View (tube, one colour):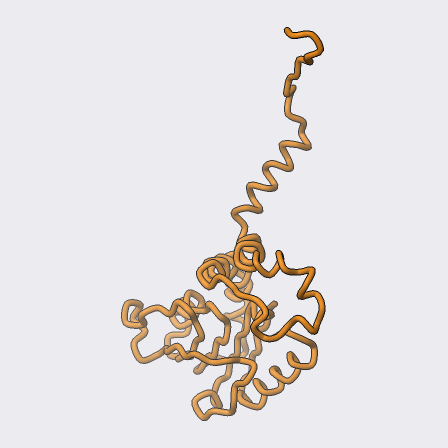
Length: 199
């Protein structure tokens, strides 16, 4: 060994190090990680500038639609759908018309319409499925709609269930605009009996 050099050894891995490593592996696969970090990485990198209100507008950031789509599908399966399935059979009525304004609700609408075999639905999805493949022809269709400016429409007026899941990125730009959007939804869908909401 050369003079002045030091022998180094890594030594045994500590329990704390193992916990951190396992926690990172779980987080790296987690839907929230993909949604916040992979999709909005550019936004986070420019945070020192856009933290000032005068540097923002409705187009002050870009998002990765594919990453968001995958993350929302995972979040639905892990968090939203299990809770929804546990309460659906407890509704005091049998829904006939369901409106789901969630960004990725196609998987959810499949099993809801197969549970309520006489119901029909309108969904909002970036990855809409083919109703014919699931035996749902004529019972569901998908629309492109801006939920912050939705207007009264005769096709929505008879909805008895309204679902809005994981929509803070579309509604919650500020407290006032969020309230205005919710009021518009209430004016548009006047007859719904169940309003399912989750950020």
